[in-house]
Image (cartoon, rainbow, N blue to C red):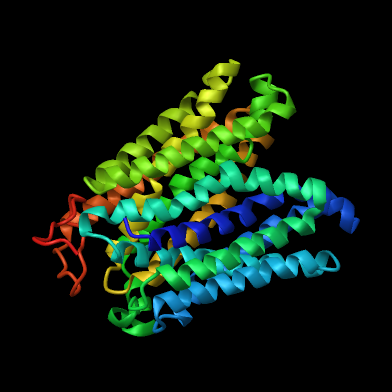
Length: 407
């Protein structure tokens, strides 16, 4: 695997850290700025809103720019947003800075996935995407706990300065390691990108992302009360258990990338099926401390097994102009975050019990399977498109066509 993937992973590590660290710093930010914790929670929403708006917008406006330049520019915007967060004088300035920090998130992963797949042989595409996403999952194991501890000891502003430093390292790595010849020449610019996004199979793939990861966030958003109220863990133990989720997510991400290179659809259907089973068993497993720990790790593993296959499927369905569709998949992921948490909250509010968000998530995962199945049927009934020059496409079975020679 080329070293350029390391540069993408460093950027993903910084993005993953700044996305999730705010959740651990809410009490510190609220005390310092004189606001309530629920009000401080809007800072999380501001970042997510930036991702949803910025992912397709920035991918579209940079459609004709060389991809390495786009990645560096996105990371410069990321550094600026985090530096402004550290210097924010009040809540409203911090809200605007967090929105700015979220703007490059989706476009970075979207364009980065296109670059990653272009660096490797066709039979290693999914694995290359999983290695880029490795930075995101490792951030949940290392970056977020360390950044949270730094914010608690040195002040929350120090955390955002440290994240800005990670962004500067990523900029240097991108400049030196990513080849300069990855440009959007085959996309036909903005019109080509938008035309590719009109495809029904692309929207079915995006719908699978929303339903599948909505299932994850329906349960994960309320995993802390499940662990304390149902499994009987002390609040001090929750951080370690959430690290188990990160370990499971990292393992699932790597496993999904490796398996998807052999069978994309098989990996996707297998991951979603595993997610249904894990979420359905959550209420039972939360009845014992050891079962709860296993359930949290399996949740991360099952959900992130589908990450690389979904990203690659969206790109393959829009292979003539994949950057906008790939970035839109990141917006879909954040919509899944918000929608899944909302649906899980409805189950709680209805009085179905502390583990009911997991059951609601199981139904969402079944919906994801249904949408993925519909996408498969549409593929079978559609004539096979001609592949774009120099690009591989997936056939209806989800198996990559092999080239006689490797890149």
